[in-house]
Length: 351
Length: 250
Image 1 (cartoon, each protein chain N blue to C red):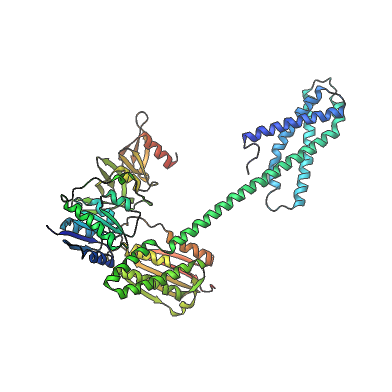
Image 2: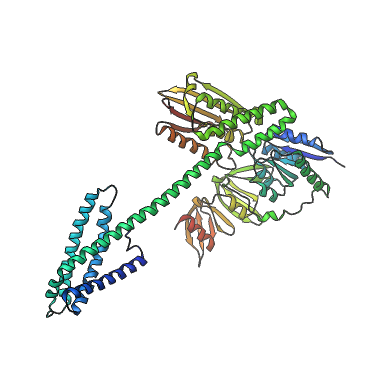
């Protein structure tokens, strides 16, 4: 944390005004103690409080050091008392030394010193308390505003993520093109149009259930993905071919709902949408060393596409893997011989 | 009166079907071809010279917008797409209309009527684009390739291979790894569609890829010159220097 006084011009001015005020207070008090007014009092008060002000500014550093983290109150208090005693001793000694230097030799400063000594100690303790209190106040106010800012940042982050998730739930491009296909099929093949409406509805129902973040069996997830791919097949016909190679025993394991959806969407988007040749999307699922491995691969057109992918889909999947499995699940991607593959390794003990 | 010749370009079969179906009720029109990707569409338009084209935007190999950019003789165009962020751009490219999928028959027939009357009235008397020209297209993310025409062939230049661009009247000369190519486009448009972090406008007539710059030297009073990896020297204007400074933090 920055120094509260030194880092801000206005505060520095206020700081010195307060010390001037304190100097005035001290000389009045000592006037009362000494019994008569003398210019020694003015010199003494000004000198001593300039010195004290310097000590108080440097007190911030041990103070902010004492006051970090989970410090016990007893430790804090004893630290404060020790540093207070040291500060006041130093202050008193330096003041005496310097005032003796400043004043002409024949003045009776020592008498003044002795008469005011108890009051001096009292002032020292009083001011020390004042300084510590204002530092305490400053730290807690700063912490509060920092906490508020942090909370606001976190909140906006959560919202943003949620929005992104919602957006990635159903791609509007997919939705409107599917509706257009249905509109067309009502004329050319009403029976098929009805089938497609039902498939789209089922797919949407499943996709909307996603916000519950309930785990589902791989079987369920794959059934839904088949729906999705069948809808895309109506749009693209022969251009989209799917293949599955799934170890039966894997089907009953649970995975987060809609985890795989973005991966298939990517395969369709970068494969089918961008290619004039037919695209084969192959799904492999198998057990391997205590994990189950899901790999999704597709061939693609190597020519550059108009826009680069944003990586949102993969990011989404890896974020969710992290949330659900901690560091136990992993994802890797590879591009080889015109075939893009995403492979997930998921722990089998996921509940 | 001759029939109006129509080409339908869309990568989805059902999407082409519905257009064909709607058109079956329109008199004196003739569908002369259907295409399922941008390249084939471009070749077909060039070869068959249709009067009217129904054009999808998101298609493999060449998008509808890119197709129109490199087309020299433009037929009347009706865009049909599920995307709506391209609408303004489509009008800039002088499209008759813009149909959002799925579209109702009434809406479809309206725009066909509009197109036909435009074609009949003095055969494609191209009026300048509307005031929409002034509005910038919503180009959310930067492009990844640029399409250019070289004689009869169409080339896709990946943006990562572009070194710099030079303004030449209404055209832009693209200097890339495999040579250079001319494209009919404004510098402003290039500046808007290329990645802001990779490319900087260093001069009224030059946009350069930042990673191509080897060093920048003072040149005369108040001027600078950028020396590229290839040894080419490009002038840097005062505002260009400011852009570079912001981009490179020096």
